[in-house]
Length: 519
Image 1 (cartoon, rainbow, N blue to C red):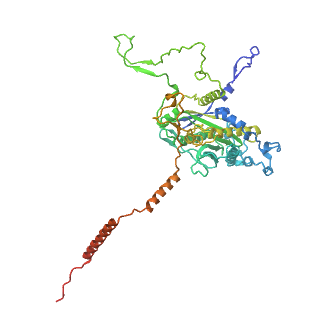
Image 2 (spheres, rainbow, N blue to C red):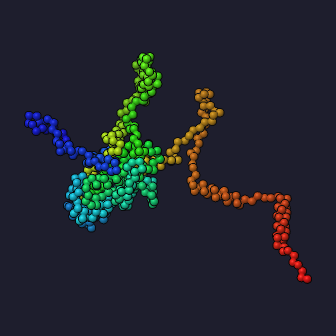
Image 3 (cartoon, rainbow, N blue to C red):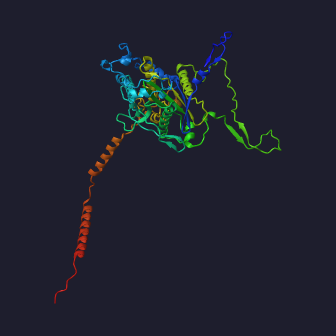
């Protein structure tokens, strides 16, 4: 950290560098199977979630509803009686009911509290931490459904689950590991009510016992790598063209909540997946052309050697125009409208969040928010805002997660109707016969020809297709072709002749040989 107030009184604004503050900004590095992770603690929320989703969460009514312990009726939220909770306001009731049973830690996770929490974990209920996260995510999900403008249920929803699963992860080409820790829950992506195969999107991790700081961070990074493999493997792309990915993790240390985000560039993932180093597409220079002929300035005695020449576009002459002519708005390169400026800012934020300062192929960046103490009013509302913005970001379809990219092939605006094929909004196609010419070509006073409008195509569903097939089969069985009397007589004769022949053959076969008469 650089301070502008120096120790020398003669130069009060001299630069003074504090060595202790400089060490605080250094990342905490962890190695898992040859893959390094650099953890940055206490980062701003804009580095994890785009600012437009944070603004959406801040403007919503959910972030302005105070829980009952913070409404002023309770002096000490930790010592409140849960039985006195108002019946008409049950929001966050289960969150605080389970929050009373979590271990009361004095130090946060980033402050080394995981190394000094043996007595706290023994006195409190470690499993209650997962229930706190589950009920908090469940309340946010229910409130988002209540505040939705359209009453329809979206086809893809996020639902919290208290299921423990152990995810395997990769650290190289055919280097698979199964020593990852079990998650304490997850926020799953479901395709509808009663879905049998939910896809985990946000794993939940809590502190259960005392362990070194490096081990705790390694376990969390293993969960992130397992989540990465779960999202990357089903993508329909070749191994050397994996897109950029980002993974999130929600953790709880006692009553302190934090959110992690790991960013994985596509060229690094492709290099690890294929087992060979691939070039960074951002480092591509201008196109070059290899010429086998010698340069014309080269002497004739020198041998022909390939030379590199950069291709440059030829300067085009400027179009002449009259001084009175004004440039049209469409040809102008300037755009200062609010929508265009907002779009530029969004792209700038997205590119800033994708910055990768580490050039090493096997090194990645993991950023984390500060720890929010859920027993404090301001921290609780800040954590609620971050989780609500994360829900908006994931459900919008613009998150760089493999399962979301595959589910939302075309990102939709949050809050809009997801019906893409609406018969009322389809554009009608105008068709004019080729034999008829337009009215402008015949005469200026001629009446315009009538335009044929083709009706929108409607594709039959599977059920209607099956019903049509069954009707067709029933129609075939019910119709009988009429035969002429000649054909009926010939058919009877042929059947009789066949029956007589077969009967005669049977008599011959059943006929026994003659016996000798006794003398």
